[in-house]
Image (cartoon, rainbow, N blue to C red; front, side):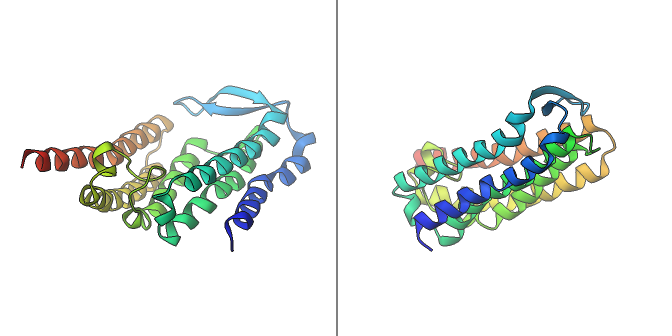
Length: 215
């Protein structure tokens, strides 16, 4: 399947939740929550039309920009096919999941949004873990630091470590949000786990860089 066809298909998938939006639009209360505080209460709202049709459009734009970024990244063109497939379908999948969830909550569905969000992130990280160590140096995806982008060995070691951490972190996110009773505890654990998953590879990468520079 060529790049143009993939662009069209992924764009249509990004917009497909609009069918759900149109079906339930008359049942929407006039506004939809877009942000929740540490207690799980809605504290930011948008007009129903912005939620129903704006969310799919937002993902369409993000999908388009990600494809443009990959096309303009010569290193990105050398990525394994699995990495390209992940980038192609990740954003449309997010549109399919998040649009109905947001509108369902607006219509009164009792959904633990903090738990849903954290578990989705956890599952996503577990999936990404299978691809991260395979990624090659590029300016679009991965842990893009000055010393990883200009050192092949640093890039590979950092992404191998990150791959192991991300699957552990993803599973920990899922477990914590199933076991912890309060929303505040779920959010706090999510923040700590995600911070560790990003900071540890970055510090490891910098340590590799300084060690090599000192030689």
